Image (tube, rainbow, N blue to C red; front, side, top):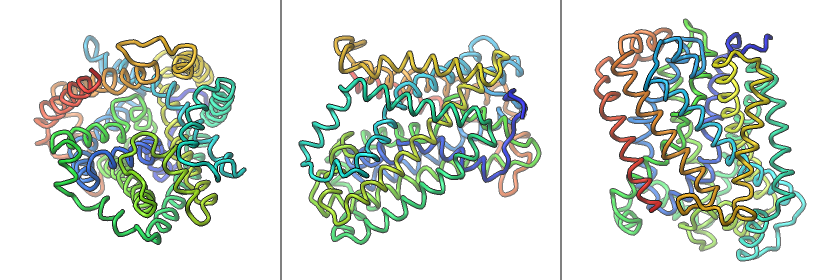
Length: 455
């Protein structure tokens, strides 16, 4: 296979679907979704996420995949081929900036997950209390040799896969990672259903409750949390879905159906994670609103109390790693293919430059709590600031401009081309108002309220 990304193609529809699911799922579905659900009323939060996935994330996914497939190019080259200069070119640069920033700090989370697998296998976490587990995780963030070694190992594994190309690298890896993720998650969910607290846990996950919503801050706060989580889970507003769309067969791929499956699969994974986690939390009387420490502090303690906890803890962090690394691979593929297409570089050169940029950016997040502890842009530590820039500035700007571009400059082509290969349903032409007004306004609302929450 040639190194030129534009000549690559998915080997099968299944390979495209599992790679796209792997990219979009990430640790957000298993790490962030449960603690956000715990802090935002349980079932009502899940309901909000499902609604927003259908009315917001799926339409955006359709648009990005269609643009990529139509031009056969990743995001920079895509808009260049469409002669979309001026303000429209911001879509490309915002998408590229988002994936580079995300890789730089996201990979540090996944490297922690990788380390926890080995700690569980060795039995190193089996006798710690909840306070000890919290201290242990915090001390890991201060251990710079550990952080750099694990992060660089993960970069090396990622580079090996991405240099293998779309079919022999990315697609082959995800055909193992994503089925494995679903199998492990189903095993853990079944285990959760067997615990004494399963009934209360399931009620919390699936039953919308007005009292829980009130405790979480009311309808509007929970709705905004669900909308924000929807963006986090969907993988839209970045460079990757353009690249994935560019590898599709122009005549035989079904974008409306595939895009819907990709987004809804993320919700299924998140629900399974909730079924696996919340029965255990209720069984052992743990705080369901434990926040971001739920996975690395609260759950490990639950596993120590559970029969066979070492096994269940290992399985949990294996599936969390599968979810996280598959997302890193998707982000890396999006960044590398964007640079290769956009600047005419070989795949190897693009991968090398992406790696260098992300390692440099990552140094700020890795050292956020040590040497750079006093560096606080806008009053935030470097790690939080990186997430703030990616999720509340570069990503939403790209989404807003892209949605308006599709509605005003490319609507007829979008409707026509998205319908090519569609076997089950086509995108309704009456959705133009949705893309022109609703999607940009809702995205802007997320940004305004998100920024407000930081200050």
